[in-house]
Length: 178
Image 1 (tube, rainbow, N blue to C red):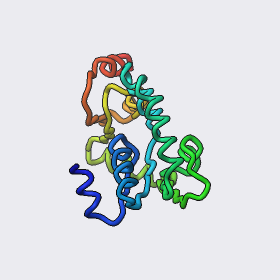
Image 2: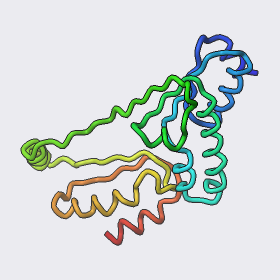
Image 3: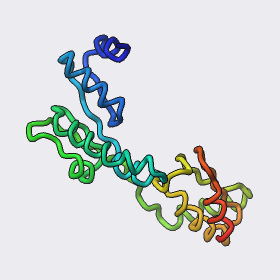
């Protein structure tokens, strides 16, 4: 009822793929309210790699759910160039926007060496941060630790900070090995 009231108060809904988005889209259809489905990630990959049986059980349900919602959406926005469009195809007459707008160019060698020199001269820490649950491999924490351990041999002032919940035992073991 609260969602219905909220949607009634607005002209258009932007629903970012999730179980809440699916509910919002159902309400939009009942109210004949236009909506845009924003596909920002792959629930299959997120849940299958979540790290426990609950995630693996939910992965196929979420995959199918998003496929159905994408196939029925008149307006759809993908945050990828190809991947999400292929995994979660839209209907033929849909108005589609894609925005894969993260571009990180490789800096020239002198930019990197000047930055490292400045950090070393000021004796500051080089802090890398990740945000994500310790329960999942999805964010690559298990990959970051050995890479930063190798870098730390040359640059001992490196630090990795992780914002997230879950058991850190596995990651502590990876750090001790490296």
